[in-house]
Amino acid sequence: MDSIKDLSVSYDAINDSNTFTSGDFISGRVNLTVSKHTKINSFSIKAKGKASVQWTEHYGQHSTVVYHDKETCFKSVQFFVQEQEGRGGDGYALLSNESGRSYPSEVAPGCHTYPFTFQIPQENMPASFKGAHGKVVYFLEAKLCRSMRMSSKAKIKFNYVPKPDLTIPSLMLPICEDLTKKMKLFTSGSVSMEVKLEKMGYHIGEDLKFEVYITNKCSRTIAPKYSLYQKQSFFAMKRRRVHTEQLLKEEGERIEPAGARSVTKVLKIPPTTASIFNCRVLKVEYRLKVHLDIPLASDPEIKLPVVILPVSPDAGTISHPDIHIGFEWSGGSNPANQTEWNATFSASSGPSNLMFGTYTSESLS
Image 1 (cartoon, one colour):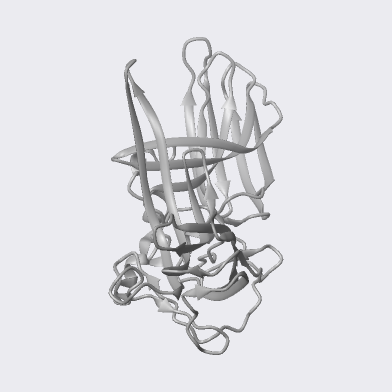
Image 2 (tube, rainbow, N blue to C red; image 1 turned 180 degrees about the horizontal axis):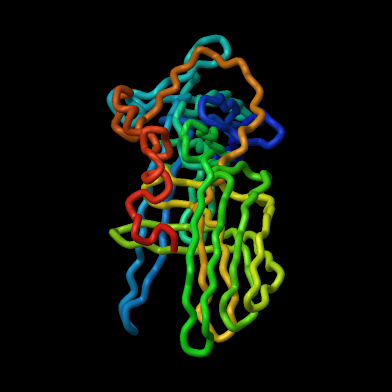
C-alpha cells in the first residue's frame, strides 16, 4: 500500500481577478500527507510557463501527419529535499524550514506543509491562452521521488496576464484604408468605401470607434456589415494552421443605388485574450472587418488590424522572504542570456514586426 495519501499544491491570490503579471511574487504551499514513515529521495516545486501546439492533417486515405511543437516561456525550480550532490536538482535553490534548517529526507506519519515563493520574471511573456490547436499555460507542479517507486506529482494552474506595452507609437495612431470596386457580370457600376479607425491599440472593455464612408454607384442596394474577429495561428514543423472566431457582428442600414452614407460606429471590446505576438509557436491577432453585401456580386471588404491590450491586474504587494529564485532562462542557464527572452512585442520591434511578424503575405487574411 502506498504511504502517500495526499499531495497537493495551492497558492495565494494577490488580487480580485486572481491573475499574476511580470515581477509578481506567487506564494503557496505543498501539502503532503503520509500514512507511515516515508523516505524521500527528492522533493521539489516547479513554476513553469509553456506554449504548445498540435494538430493533424490527412493526406489521402492512409496517411496522417501529426504536427506539434512547444516553447518554454520560463521555468524555476526549488527543492525541499534535494538528491545527493551532483545529481538531478544541481544548481537549483534548496529551501529551508521556518527554523532555517533543511527539510528532513524522512517524514513521520501525518500532514506536512512546505511553503514556497517564486517571482515571475520581469519579461513580457505571452498571456495564458487556450485556442483551437494550442495553448499557453502557467502552472505550479510538485514532484516527490522515492526509491523503487513512481514519482508522485501534483499540479495547479495560474493565470498570467502581461503588462500592456504602451511604448509603441503606432498603437495610438489612427489608421485608414479605402477601396473602389467596379462591378461585373450581373451588376453594373461601382462602389467605394473608406474606413478610419481612431487608433490600433485597445484595452479589453474599451469602445472601439471607427468611421465608415460608403458611396454606392452600382445598380443594386448594398448592406454594410461590421465585425470583429480573432485570428489564431499555430506553427509547427514548418507548417501553419489558422483558426478564426467571430467576436462581434453588426449590420448597418441599406444604401440604395446612387446613395452615399457616412457612419460612426462604436463596438465594445468583449472579454477575450490579449493579442499574442511574442510566442514562437502561436499567435493571436484581431481584425476589424467592414464588407459590403451586394446581391449577385463578390463583396468588397476592408480589414484593419486591432491590437487588444491586457488590462493591468490590480496586484497587491506582498512581502517575500530572502529566497533564491532559480530561473532557467530560455536563452540558456546563464542569466546573462536573459535578453533572449525579449518579446517581439516591444518598442524596438517596430510596427511591422509587431503586427505581421514573419508571415506578412497572409497577415490580413
